[in-house]
Length: 296
Image (cartoon, rainbow, N blue to C red):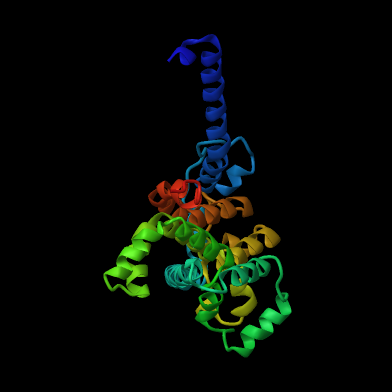
């Protein structure tokens, strides 16, 4: 209390408050500005001067994006790959992390080193493409799921968290006759909810935002296109063609779209699901990522 009432304490409080306000403004302004442009008439946006509120309201930008061919099918595929990919990746990484975190596992140090090496060294794009093609993953939905089931980074994060769980819990369960699967499901996993939620959000964001794999492996198959890949094609189209027939097909005399306005609408639609999901998992971040900081 004495520190807070002193001159230096008051100066620190004022400067800290100003810094946090500036940080919030810098963080939120690009998002709010993009939202304002997406809700503003495209032609009017070319005049500039739009900051936090639209000057000429319209939903035409969103209609242009939503009416894009294959967008609904791409959205369904993106939702499916996000849900299935997140669940399978979390399950496989958690199981592997549990095995490697056991002190009785003989080769845990060697395998951990091997997985760290894979984070920095890979075979390259062409060998990976040929491998996926040989495995029959190209032109299929499973090319989004199988390669992402195991991540060295996510596995090591979960393993480090599990290492901090007291051994006495496992020993007590073994005395009661519990096997390793029972220990994993009923003792370790409930204690790992924070790190599970953190890793799940990382995987979900990566799956939702990914479009390069759709272009590379499923480019010729509209059935397995994704929302992000379709939006990328739309953005490329309106950017390269400007006021083309495709980008203006939904425009009216009172409301027109431009590459900038369509880009803003596509950006908002892409980030909206993640923005809605993040607040529910954010509280796990400190516990999930600050791992190994407290030891018994």
